[in-house]
Length: 173
Image (cartoon, rainbow, N blue to C red; front, side, top):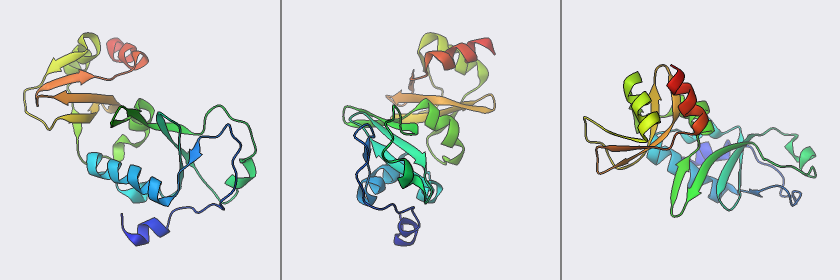
């Protein structure tokens, strides 16, 4: 992330958010998650200029910000925006919601699947790939949509991280 890009992010006054809010990420913490998205999926940090980032013990959230966001800091909330990335042990995994909304900006580790592959993955939970890929999480795309995340292991094993609701939709295609 360039200094120019970093300076373009929305700045909010340092203030106390209601205790129901997740932790607001400062610029250095935000840079860490943006570096992960850029390195893993080729998503340019500039895409996220209008967003604020928050974190709980297991999830990073994004919320579209504006200059009046501070007006709601005292509200008691249940969720703070879109769950974007989950923390799984020492690994980070983008959420289905994040991939469905921002997958279009990914330029790497996007796996295009045919409909029969999507159906097999949804029903079996794992499929073998014909090509060898880098191990790790990949964004699953196919049938003109971004569906969620899969984990590639040993280069050719694709393990489903699709939600049950997404599996039902794929099954109905």
